[in-house]
Image 1: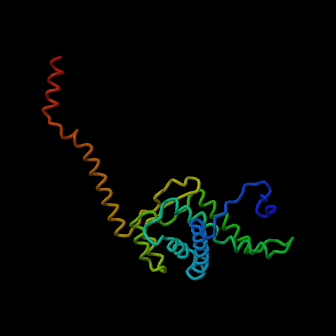
Image 2: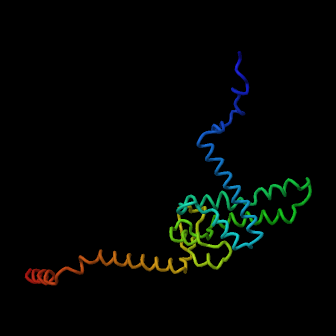
Length: 219
């Protein structure tokens, strides 16, 4: 019996798409990732309606927190590039699909396109986000009531960019007492380490230098 064409035919000679068994671990990971992305996008739209722009941004990143611990820098970039920036893509596509051929773009379509371009360019040059890679900052952020934006503004913020994904710029060190105390302790530890490095030179007995000078005088 000849093999089925459906089983042997290749799609146009192009690169064959990788397919995972529906019950495999990798397929499950992909499904969970997509569901999480969709859930975050839907939540972001609802929060924007209820809370306004600034609080909705904070709330988006609040719901992007992992169940435990903090994000890596790579994971934070993923949240921005793959979830935050395309959050209105479906809405934009729906606007395009509803527009009859030859008709101008609606005001909503213009607004969504401009917002996407502005945010993408902002991410390229450097966007300020709450630091989800810092353990103490994440611990404090988890305590937010998801309503009071002033609380979040006490926390630590960093600037990241798609042009330099491995670089973090501290834009706001944070004014929360815990963050300020931690910064003071880190500064004191750094100064103590510098003092320790310089100690051997300062602790040399004066007699050593005196004997060296006598020897040089005797030459």
